[in-house]
Amino acid sequence: MADKKPLILVTNDDGITAPGIRTLIAVMKEIGDVIVVAPDSPQSAMGHAITINNTLYCDPIEIEKNASHSEYSCSGTPVDCVKMATRQILNKKPDLCVSGINHGSNSAINVIYSGTMSAAVEAGIEGIPAIGFSLLDYSMTANFEPSKKYVKAIVENVLTNGLPKGVVLNVNIPNLKSVDIKGIKVCRQANAHWKEEFDKRQNPMGRDYYWLSGKFINEDKGEDTDEWALQHGFVSVVPTQFDLTAHHYIQELNNWNLND
Image 1 (tube, helix red, strand yellow):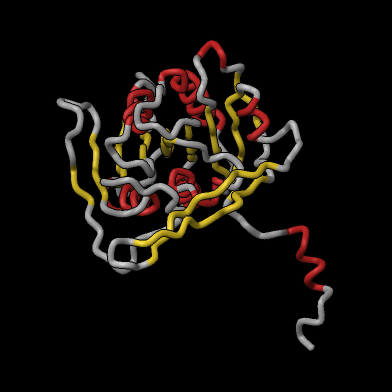
Image 2: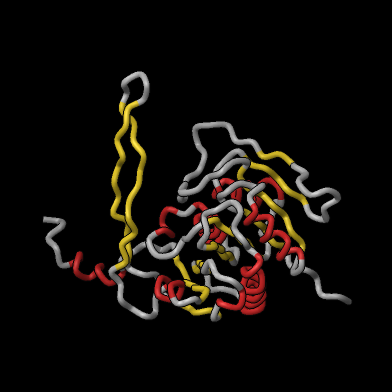
């Protein structure tokens, strides 16, 4: 008797028609049975937002003719997509959730803002092994071909080895030709941040409006970080947890006179 194929949930934050998710779907179909629940429009930088004050729609959609998998277009956020998939469409947990492939980096501090990674984190909260994939190219014409073998290798390893409860993987892929990617490095998240600025302008009616811009600042000189790996031609894999407790500071807080 043939082994049963794993059920894989695919989602993203760039929208269901984005080239990145179409690439991810194609790779996942080589590995298992695929269900796609993804936003109907771009939801980048939504973080872990959910829809609570508006109606939520989730409709079947045909993007590929005679496809062997089902797809649903959701009006909500990436996290909404995961919730809808597990609670309404599948009514069960898939064996794996993959999110992406994102158009642009989700390394370092970007993981906090990322809709791609928040979808993976939501799956992790549900006890589903999950991976977020990103390519360091923001263009909608990005070449995802070099990403495929790394995506497949990482997914197959997660399916074989599993992930600890509360841990998901944040995978970033350098924007290089296949021959120039040196391999995969397991890393820590770099201690880097955005120095943000607001470009103030006026509309024709005289009302002020703003465009957010800024510079990415990486002051982390470690050679074990995702930023170092990506700058040196490696795919970075960061095990990421959603427990934000600063455990090392609990004892110090207990020394404060909080109850006086």
